[in-house]
Amino acid sequence: MTPELAGQANLLKVIDTLASRYLQGKIRVLRLAVIALLAEGHLLLEDIPGLGKTTLALALSRALGLSFGRIQCTSDLLPSDITGLSVYNREENNFRFIQGPVFNQLLLADEVNRAMPKTQSAMLEAMEEKRVTVEGKTYLLPEPFMVIATQNPTDQTGTYPLPESQLDRFLITSDIGYPPEELEKAIISKGGIRDQLDDIQPLITSEEILAARRAVREVHISDSLVDYIFRIAKGTRAHPYVLSGISTRGAIYMATAARAAAFLQRRDYVIPEDIKLVAVPVGAHRLILSPQHETLRKQEILQSVVENISVPML
Image 1: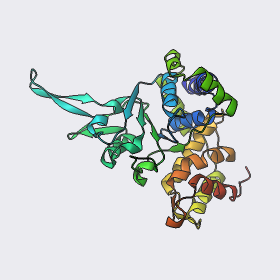
Image 2 (image 1 turned 90 degrees about the vertical axis):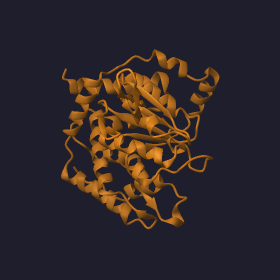
Image 3 (image 1 turned 135 degrees about the vertical axis):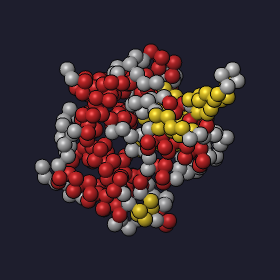
Image 4 (image 1 turned 30 degrees about the vertical axis):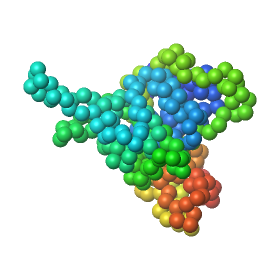
């Protein structure tokens, strides 16, 4: 079996294992997280506290066998708390750089919108360029590298809305939602599963993840489906409730995520259903609504746009 096929099989095993044993009812967001990983992007989870956002990131890092770092974002968090800093060594008469948590393969930025805007921006270079610059020196981050950030609703006390420039760094945004009723009752009865996460064994290697990423880049997307993505993006720009629609970069991300979705379905070509699957998670957070419609849900607006775009015949 080639590394690409091994990565494909093992990533599907990661999703199935976590969804069946540790994160029941979370298969949708697990699949989106793996799509973001394959598409070399980052994931933003938006929901109220207590629904398992942090648990999902911890479980995923263990199953993927990735080194894990966590930042608990607070109002007094400094950029150096993320990237690291240089410390003077008296014995050697020089400065030694101490790496921050961003130098892990999977970084959890918990409650990212509680950090001050200056600290939020410290992650931009890392997320976009896969490197950080400290005191004029550039350090490369490990591969694969992925940020999973969690965000509380912006109407909660002590939160700072993420600027559009930072939101754009996230390939996919998703809520996590409440579990089904019977499952939630079982969780309440048995308690949390945080202690069980230590039992999760790696199901894939970093080399297989990187090979799978290379295979995703080769997944074919036809001209008719490129036109389909373009018409979705164009539809958001013409929507009466939208001040700024999906950009060209957002459309590129949609195509990349669709390739990853097709790869997880064991196909080397994209079909319309792949695009429909990722359109809202990739595109909704990129919309800027007009002031009089800011209270509306962006996901519902984009979903209505997608439903009104004719699907091409393959």
